Length: 566
Image (tube, rainbow, N blue to C red; front, top):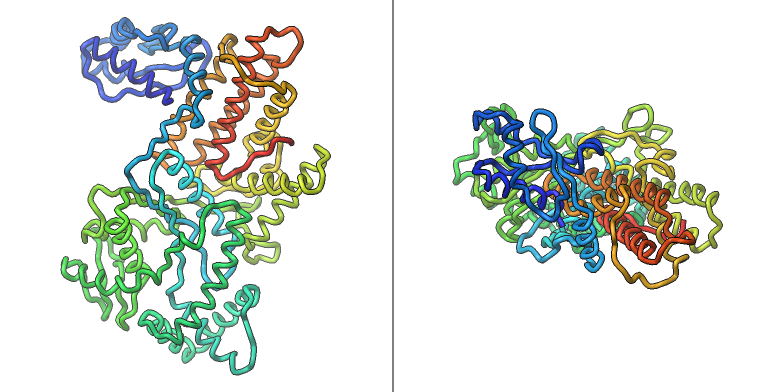
């Protein structure tokens, strides 16, 4: 259920009964125990428009707050309404949730498509740490949208159509005469560096490479055959990374630049028809209002650019897929590019006016010195190597805590290591840069995946020791049970917030608070201790079980697994 929405509706009804016309209401969590569970502070903003004292408004409104959800209200300060939730109502709501596999969250099928464009690896090169954030943020949002009932279309927009491929094909031709082969990705990585060096130092070679780009885009069968070799090898590596990382991207989700190739002439033609094109030095450009730097959609040599392809992709996603929300999970440095193509797509009518276009921007992963994350020799860190290191470090961390047989240890290390890597990233505001710290992310304390996984495993241990059927009802009695119960009811509010602003750190913050409250509950409310009556024991077991299910579901949305023993 949406707890805050429920309380907001109660406040709105009270305002209506008090004959006060007010905008949508929003209660906040109380900052201190003596202020109750929630606070309504709207009387202050209403005072000016009503020409009345805010405390008098609050007093008047409180008279009309009648609901079995609320135990009591009090007026505080200049006009705050403090609200206490009733324990009987809270117990009733929690008992309803225990019977619902979706934890009381509305997940009915919604007739709305959402496209999430994420990951975007480079072809003919290995994925590196720069691809991590796009991949896991995009996958988390896709998981969330799908869980809430939306029709989610994951799209991996790979760059397979640029100048680099003309360069690679031209270089492949040169070395083939020497009898060399570059079929393995590790060779392709080296191959790419050699080709790039040749491209930068040899003007004749660079011109040939550019000609091959035009031939690829024109459908030349010979060039396309060589091009396909690079793409297939690169995608095989990407699939290995996705599998180890536990993200849901597959071959079927790849929507490469090349797939829009046939649309590009039509895109330019429609832009010309709309009067948006300006010729500058032979290139076809679009000048946006209040911007001196144009978008180039076709070069003087007839070649197309990234912007042209992105416009084609937007048209495809809006008019063919009929998406109503299109999210691009891409580095913050591309903000200006997306601002421009979003504006053009709307102005040209490629995208429906009611379609939401969003650049889900994110910052950079930094090392402890505050510089972009690199290898010790200053090179780019391969993502597969980072994942492997996470698993090795996780194995060292958990080996000292519990004795596990080898197979279980290997599985647990992967779950813990990959989970730690993901959670450390997702737990910070995505728009911020963050410091990559192995020790912090693999800690049993603090806002880490391991802390959540440990809380989940502890609950599973309790349930194993109980070794019985959970039959009974939750009956909230103590203050800590009250706090834990409220937190459990706020799960849908949090998911809605993440849905609205695409900020996964709201969910990680919630899970950390929930796990912390459970640890306090565990210390203050013995569950299996001798002498506890059956009803109390069962109530606490059900609370613990509901907490575990909520943690598991929250982590699942983040793409993180749990283990029963830790």
